[in-house]
Amino acid sequence: MRPCFQANLIISEDRASLDATMDCKKILEELNLYIDGDLDRDLCERLEAHLKDCERCQIVLDTTKKTIQFYRDQAPLELPADVSERLHSVLRARWKRQ
Ligand SMILES: [Zn+2]
Picture (tube, rainbow, N blue to C red):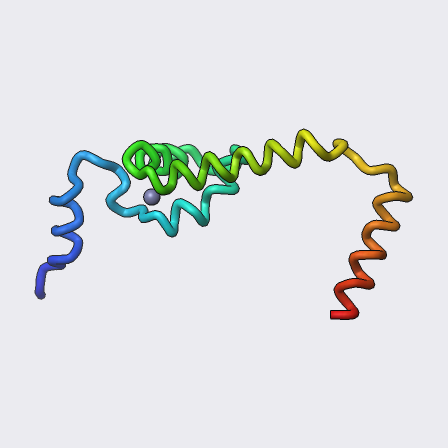
């Protein structure tokens, strides 16, 4: 059986870091869960280890957090039921027309 050269290469290149198995794409997929605090601890630690070394993901995380914060600050926590109902019917009508 041939050894898996690819796996050995990744591990030796990045031995000290836990993010060897987690690339940026994976990070971005889990980012929403991470921000919401819904990520399990193991994954969360690996994500944070990756973030420490990856400026690109840090920027995405930062921007996403700020965007979420912005909308949380802007929107009331709960719309009155009638407003919510009207909003939804307008949105439904829009979607149907497209
Ligand atoms: Zn990254």
